[in-house]
Length: 250
Length: 303
Image (tube, rainbow over all chains, first blue to last red; front, side):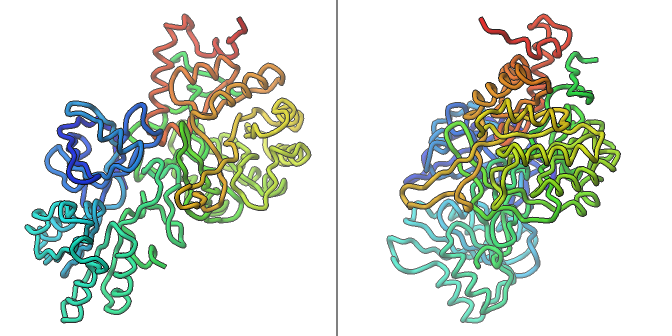
């Protein structure tokens, strides 16, 4: 992690997307061009909100802008949802270790708003000439975020709870593996249940699996050492946010 | 001269603002977006004699106006700290006050002795008040152990020695007096308050360790009163810490009698807080009608 900054980002757009999910576009000319796939930002939610900033993984970085999907769950995200175009929000970043795309086919598995860090990785992999398959899961189809964006990068397989309750999107990956398809790297994000399922497949098929993980985070910059995870107490903000799946699912 | 110079005992600082231990890390490979030499001092996270991983997750719980942490002092241990961490501070002009946490007076002695031998260590802050260590009597809550710990450290160093205390005692004045009598050069007031949080929906205690320490603006008025009480009753310099977030907060602590202040939890919300407070103090000199910030230390008065 290097080269983070604190910047007063300008809210370009902020709108309700579906159910409890919102989409915010921020302009941050200093920070955004430095951001790489796999990194995140801390968003300071403004006075009157909670004391600590909120960690956010943008779904897209372009020129001076970044798009952030967020789920409104508490005071901090409620405060974000009240932000208007033209408002300023401090952002701290880019933070965390960029995700290095390695050679070979890539499988991405994401659920709900947790799928957002996967799109920059899909784009990065495609730009390196790798094939990408994406497996997206959500409560219902409006929450299959950025479906078209993922489809531009390769084949996409989807699952929604309302259409096929009781199934997991990783069942599809399991079928593809049984049929002989072999990813070299699998990245999973957004649901612990999916992480456990991928861990089972990793042990069986031997690909390299990574997970985007979450813990309460105070600073995002390695100062508080609060976001420890796994038996080695690795810090999500520095060693992650993507960590080897074996360290996360024990 | 900027007008912000202060002294804490014999230690001269370019300004009175420094990080609270455990809330700021400096690594030249990923430096913060400001010149760390602008800080009055650098205080790294507490060091233990032997390596330890810290407490199990979850380590954080947010509260109104504050934060409960149960980090538990992850530490590389003295040997690796000397070999790997201290060299990072070489070349910096801000004095480095190393914070140490011992499990016995003997450990405070060993840590202080070894660290004092290193020239770039400006002084030692004894963390006598971490609420997050298991099976550990907090010296700050036991006046006998407090005296013994401070005396042990004092016996092996001539460098500035600060004692960081807890306000969870019957009389903070008595504890500060004990530190003075045991040879401390200053007291750092205060550490966090033991606290906890429960997720009522899941009936789950949030912190992995059960309880933690409360910091942030929630504790600021209590910290301010502790600074006031000690600086008016005990002839020892005070470093004030507890929820300081703005330049006005910093001024309150200086007026209450603190010779310097530490900023902790506020840096998690806004990493530029320390440098902004320093800039703010500079701007306030004229407004306060003083040439030197030192003139306002202890200048707060009853109406």
